[in-house]
Structure formats: structure tokens, C-alpha cells
Length: 607
Image 1 (spheres, one colour):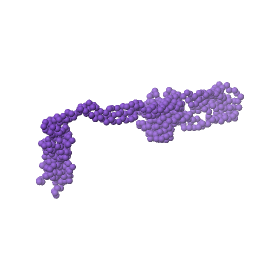
Image 2 (cartoon, one colour):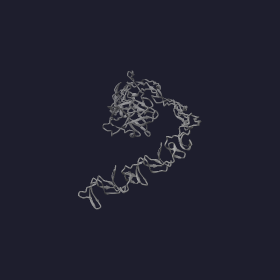
Image 3 (cartoon, one colour):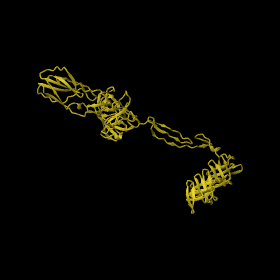
Image 4 (tube, one colour):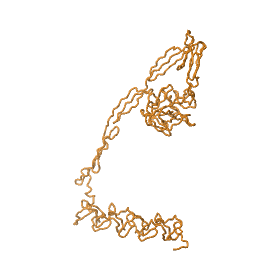
């Protein structure tokens, strides 16, 4: 009797054994046809080289973005053996792990996107260095190295897309819940994409977009392959990247197991044991030697999430986490807040003239102001026998402060400009004040007979019978001219029109300008001033910086339109102003006049 054994290196495919006799069909291999070809990427080797030996389909590098809330996603992919991997920035240089992390998308420049791990509190980083083409993490969203482009598969992808069949996503706004995208970085004209893998070697998480085409091996095999065995022995057939061994064995013949292969090997990880694989004879299919379990690997740990305690917030020792598998080996512990340690800063004693301060209570560790201080009022001077008992200062009133005092000088008692010792300042003439008002002093003595202007450090004042008249408002005459007084003081800031019993006058910086002839304005309009006074009898034309104007009884008449004359001729006036831009005909009192540039052109007509 003939027996057929079908053995595939790496895995077995379903086969049906038929024992009909020598020369008949013994086994049938059925395969599934899939898509034939697509763009290829070259996954990096252990030493960051990109060769065709590691070629794979670009679609195998798509990541699914599952939305959690606004701009926050869980991002997952699948390894070549179907395991799920997640984008997790918790481990340096290893962006794919079997533990998920919520990733926040942040806008970069020119449609780029930054990936921020909300647990690890780090940004995904890609080295732009030919000697270090791998992922890492960074604390800030640095330009270029922390910004990535997303591409999605699209039937409408532009012909010039750097990744054929894929379309650039327009920043964060283009990311859709459940969408599949390539995570890409451009370095020196080449596109590198993230490779979904659970390998512990950092370079293997990177793939390079190539010009190669990836042909799916399942598509090149026939849907049915027939093997016919006629005698003892073995043969092999390669379908895609898998070699199938076909052994024909006649009962009763002992196999010497001369040719064997090792199948079902498995590398150990931190979480699962590995397996050395079974040694199987390729001639008869018998398991010659069973494999052995390989112990799980030791966890490679680092402390994550550590934070120092502050004065007001608890800290954390950090979790001991395996960088290979993401498992938390040992949870950390809370570090209690230390509390403030304070000292008083900024304290100052009050003086006689300046306020003091109790000082702020400030933490010496974090510089927080725990308690604000309070102002201490100034003490004020306490003069005893002419000296302040607090600061030692002499009483300035004893001999340096002069004021209007009622004292006796010689045999005369009256008001004098003197200090507390009774020393009169005979050189002083001007205005000074006491509790009864402001007064005019001449030669150190109050002069109640004086009416006119007096000066002190605050300006010039109108004095009537020796006292400043704060009720005086208007124009006042003096030996130095007419002045505008407001509240008793000469207002040397005022320029404008002011009235008195003699008319309206033009004042410049507080004084009537009798030399001024022209136009001036007040709240009632524009007026014609001649020799400093409004001329209410004047009707005619007058000029200022804005043009020539028609004045009627001293006031510019903005409602007037017609003809008017001055020493230079007759002119056309519109809305009170000579219109120098007008050329044409004007009808005035039933007669038509030719006007050019605002002036009447009489020709032979004379007035």
C-alpha cells in the first residue's frame, strides 16, 4: 500500500489522502487566490538596511484610527502574523506595543500632524539622520522631526502622488473615525512609514517606500495542485515563499529519516514561552524528535510616570514597565506633598515719612507667596525742642519755613512774610497763602492796597485789594497788557475768543493779540478779527489757512452762495467759501457772469 504525506515548511495546508494504487492521484492541494500585486515597501533589517529580502505589501502598513474624543484616537495595526499592535509612545525607540495608549493629534505645519501620548506625555519623534532612521520620543513638538504626513488609500489619488494609489490627508481635519492611514516621514527625498510589528529591535519598526512591486504569492499558485506518487521517495514544490514536501511511502518499508526539517519554531517573549520546533522527516512525515519549550525572556524594565512631589501636590515613584511587552511589572507609590517651608521676605520698618511693610510669607522651596504682608503706616515726626524723637530731624518750621504770620516787628504789628522766629523775608514780593486765603505780599509785608497781578510758584493771579480774587473770570488789564483770567488765575494755555464789555477779543496763550487780523473760531462759529477784536461791522471776504471766506457782519456765512468782492476782484462763493475750482457761468441778480477758477471774468463789463 502506498501512503502520501504532505508537509509544508513553516505550516501545513489541508490535503486529502487517496490510496487507490500506484500511478493514481494521491493528494490534492487547494489554495485561495488573492490580489495579485501592489506597491511594495522594504522593512528594515536588524541593522537598518532596506533590501528586497524584506519586501512586503504597503497595505500591510496601514494603521486604523479609532476616535475616543476630539482629536484623540487609539491607533492600531497588524503584524504579519495577524497580531494587533498599538501606537504607544511610552517606550523609547519602540513605537509599537501590545498595550494601547490614547494619542492626541496636534497640528503641525503644511498639513503635517504631531502624535502626543496622553499617558507617556511625549511626542512621537523620527530621526532625520541617515545613520539613525528609527522612531523615538520627544518632550516638545519640534519642527520636522515630530511632524508626520498621513496618506490614505484612494482611487482618486493624484497621478504625481509620491505613494501611488495613496492620497495625502489634509491635516487633522482630514482624519476620520475608523480610517486607515500610512504614518509617513520624508527624509532626503525618501518616504519612510511606520511598520506594525512587536519586534524589540528599533529599526524593524521602520519601512521604506520603494519602486518595487509586491506580488502576493497566493495569487501565482494554481487553485488546485495535483501530486501523483508512483514509488517510495520524496519531492518538493515551492508555492510563493513556502516549500511543500511530498513524501510517498510504501507500507512495510522502514524509513531511515535521512532528511529532516524543523517546523513550528517560536521565539520566546516576555509574556510567552518559545519553542525549539519539531524535527520532522521529509521522506515519511514522522516526527523524529519533539521540540522543547524555551523559557520566557526576562523583562527589560524602566520606570515610567515618575513625578516629584511638590509643596502642594503629591508625587509618584513611577511604575516599573517592561519596554519590550509594555507590561507593568510593579506599580509605583504615591509620594505625599511636602508642604510649604516659609520665610518672611520684603519686610521694612515704617519711618516718619514712609510706610513700612510686615513682609510676605514665601515658601523657600517653590517661591509661592503663602501669605501677603500688611502695610505699616508712617509714624510721622514727633518734634520736641525742635528735633524729631523718632528720626532726629530738625523741625523745618523753626527757621526754614516762611509764611504769612501776624507778628510784631519793631513797634509795628501786622501781617508779615516771616518764619517762626519772626525773621521777615524783605526780599519777597508775590502771592502767598495762609488759612484765610491767598494774599499779595510786597517786600515781606501784606499790601491790602494792591490791585493787579501777583505771582507764585503756581502762576500769575489777579489780586484785588491785596487778596487773590478766585471769582474773577474774564479779561483783565494790566501794565503788561490784557489777560484772560479763569478762577483768579491767568490761563496762559488758552487761545481763542473772549468777550468783555468792550467787545470780543482774540486771545493767544492767555493774552489779547492786538496785532492779529484774520479769522478765529469759537463755539458760535467763525469770526472776522481785526487788530485783535471781532469787527461786527465787516462784510466781505477774509482768508485763513483753509481758503477765502464770505463774512457778513463779522461772521463767516456758510449759507451764502453768490458773488463777493475784495481788493483783488469779484469771486464766486459757494457755501461761504470762494470756490477756486469752479469755472463756468453764474447767474447773480438776473445777470449771467463768466467765472474762471473762482474769479469773475468781466471782459468789457465793468462795475
